[in-house]
Length: 109
Image 1 (cartoon, rainbow, N blue to C red):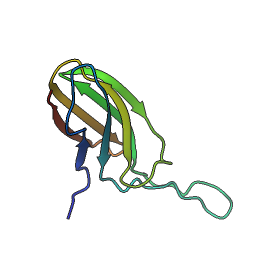
Image 2 (spheres, rainbow, N blue to C red):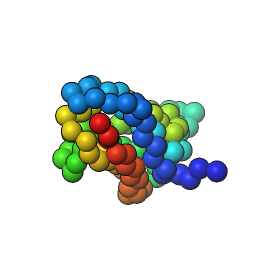
Image 3 (cartoon, rainbow, N blue to C red):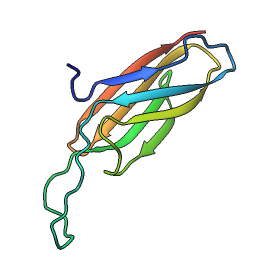
């Protein structure tokens, strides 16, 4: 069984220098949804959801995104990457409980 916080990164099987490839990243996370009572007021609770995604390539930040609690459980994020050299792609997710989840993939030409 997969664990909460596991990050998976999917790249194309073959990449040429100069290609713009589609990267898919999944983080296993329950993404708690804010609950409301019958009057529409938020039920007080510490809701836990992914709020930030940071992508680095060879240690340089190339993408940062922020989300709200409206993202689905086990969200998948897709983004383009222009590959000019081989290297290490890292995707980090931060949640509202202060936890950090990280995955890496080697980009090979």
